[in-house]
Amino acid sequence: MYFSILNKKTKDRLIECFEYTLVLLLVIECNTVYRHTLGRPIVPQIWNYLILIECVLIFLKKKTLIKQYSYKIIFSMLYCSLLMALIQIPQSEIVIYVRLFLLFFPLSIILCLQNLEEGRTFNILYKFENVVLVLAIASLIFWLTGSVLAIIVPNMELPVTWNNGDVYSGFYGLCFQYKTQFSTIPVLNVKIFRNIGIFTESPMYNIVLIIALFTELFLRGKFNKIKTFILSITILSTFGTLGIMLMLAAFVLKIIFNSNHKRRYGFYMLTMFLFASMIAILFFNKIANSYGSFFVHLDDYKAGLKAWQTSPFIGTGFNNYEVIHQFMNPLRDGNLGTSNSLTDILGQGGLALLIVYLAPFIMLLLTYKENKKIFYWGFAPFALFIVTIYQYTFLLFFILAFCFANSCWIKKVSE
Image (cartoon, rainbow, N blue to C red):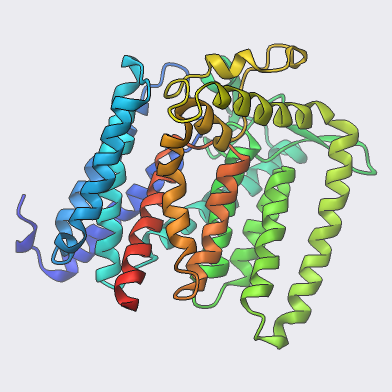
């Protein structure tokens, strides 16, 4: 298809449509119930569509500066190809490795570079935030009226592989609840379902919510208080301690980022105090009532690090959890799921694979003086990489590509 025959207005509309489709699929693929539906009727197509959409967007956009960065893109592909020869990749996992590392990652770098050239640096991330906002509003409505007040009842059920084919009940496909996803409200001692939206559990929901919140606070010219409030309330409704702590970190970093705007100190300090109080209550309540969960998270780090020590450079095998399981505490009583990306990567691919993840963040760190707002925004996906599990999602690889492309661009402009 020859896109140059399209007029600018039509081309811009197509780009908008494809970009929204891209971010919607990125969200769906990031550990939603639809991504893990038993039988996976749409999952194989999600991966293919993501790659196809990026190819279409690349053809729709300008390509004049891509040659200047081609050697860096080729270098990243060569390194990822070398990894295939170094780390053990089971035959069943080769396809997903190729899709993520050798196709989607370099295509995302090209797309991000094109956006930089056109002066649309954050447009896809803005669209990502808009999609998450719609999901947040929908989940709040159904969570309050359904899970909390029981005014409406679930009208659907979905078997999900995330919990061995167990059934999630949902409200019109926009908000789900699951029997193990509940929390105890302090003082009242009332158990309540967590707001997990369309995701498998609250930490997975917090991934997109936290990234959207950081996008609003740091990448927008002037953040919108209503959007910030909606995202913050939704994070609180998940009752996820780590999510709430990262939300507080966002406001603390915003205070530091805007340290020259003294008039805003009062608002930020009051907000920080309120959220700090909430976190303190939730944290102590978590220790008192959910020590088992805290124990499992801590054991995940220990098991991952012990697995890494068996093969520090190339790990024990891509997407291989067998060695990690061997080092897990038997008191976990059959709970073999892991909870953080960092030690999973170390255990499975060693330092060789970790470089793919750390290099873009380190490159972003080195551009701190040139563009502070991207640096502060980068705290969110990096912190999530350390404390949650999303290392093989297309969303994280798009973020890595975004960090890589912006670092290259900023370095070029500053020279």
